[in-house]
Amino acid sequence: MREVIATSEAPAAIGPYSQAIRAAGLIFTSGQIAIDPATSQVVAGDVRVQTERVLQNVAAILAASGSSLGKVVRCTVFLKNMGDFAAMNEVYGKYFKEAPPARSTVEVARLPKDVLVEIDAIAVA
Image (cartoon, rainbow, N blue to C red; front, side):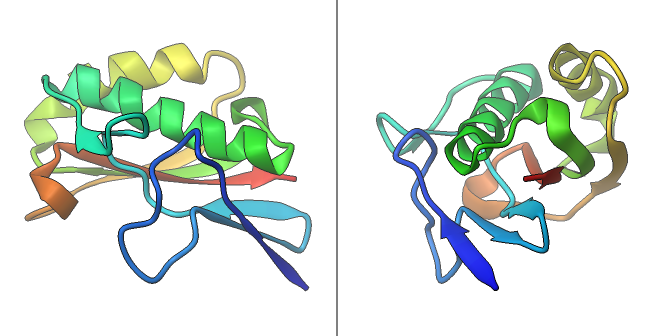
């Protein structure tokens, strides 16, 4: 059994996917980019500003599912430039202070809407 999770507190899907799916006691979020749900626009700023918005979006989706960032077990971070790793990591660490989730971080050639960072998460429901 699977359930679609959707909230207006995070950007609407810009393609044929769901913000998140609940299945097998877990929440699987789609990759989130730095779109402000109030304006549907990419936030202006560097990777720190964008990472902040991305993690706010992830948190909103998890909250809508009844979960939270504290229940995240795995994240994948996609960076446009691995040179931004330290700055992204600084912001990421503010959201995952204790017992941070497992994580992979990879550099990619391009991200949707030419953002600097995208993050997806898997959390306990």
